[in-house]
Length: 434
Ligand code: TXA
Ligand code: MG
Image (cartoon, rainbow, N blue to C red; front, side, top):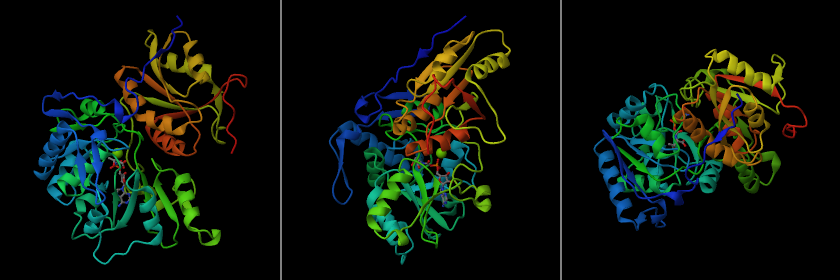
């Protein structure tokens, strides 16, 4: 039997304006709505909140945080599980709630430059390069490494590293919560360790419901995957991207080019594994996503390369053989229900749909040339398809430019296997040209 793909609607527009006021509860966890558009900031970073329900929700979250409990809150990247960064007992609850290995350090979130100064070593002067990155990308999805004052930042947060990762989120709810609490918050993504990061409050409730007292719901996250983690402390003066994310390599390169006019003195932007290799940090948990399994839903995920040629030790197969092999391998004798996360107009959808006894649930990654949309939809797509009860998820590659670099970084780690498939030339996308 031939099945037509069932397309899942994006049930909410991916904007914060969609936020509606509703309070949800699950035994042990309360969800309170916050309206990000009701929050503005004074020049010194103090929040002014026009919506009483949002103000009450933020105060309730702040009270819990000050009592040493973790709270889930939205950021522009993904939802975070926050606790007082300077209180080791509070920070330790992040690890137990997520099941996070203790050697994986946390990002500290601040709401203002004054708060940043409070946690840096007393006489530390930031470099010209660091000042530029802060000026251009904060508040926003960029995390920077700083030298750590071990008398201020507990070692549980840094996993004993000599550096601490810090960012200033731009999401009004995140920034207002940190300011209201008047304390930096350590916050990893609010998912059980190894799972995809949550980009909506519903994802958090599904995963950590009952394990956290309070989830602030600020609507879907705009960026949809995590911040870019940058090491700009290296003595050679170049910028190292430890984890690609919401601020793109292209954004950082153009900010540097505007400030350093002479190309000979201009810092270069080096992406780990793409532009440099470092065996020592490959093994270290401080390199984001290197040591532990990451971003994987409970169902198997396959990454399909449709434009990139296979490496020398791999061969490619036709897309239709891929789908028939997948169906036959299930060996269940009943039609196989799979999820497809592919760009608009992808031929993979048509080929999967025309495979006998394959039932497809389709989620769009947006236009093929809009990597920001694909990035915004990746984790939501994986989590929604898992919720739909599919047996296997198939994700098509996107070009590794702009946000596509972060998209591919995450999906390569989430996917248990990758295949290079041919789509007949008349049917395929235009091949990638570098
Ligand atoms: O967008 C984000 O960054 C989100 C939101 C909640 O802010 N947070 C987030 O946290 O993604 P998490 O824990 O899921 O990822 C933080 C990554 C970790 O993989 C860790 O290896 C890296 O940052 N990291 C933290 N401290 C570091 C350090 N001192 N040196 C190198 N990497 C560090
Ligand atoms: Mg994470």
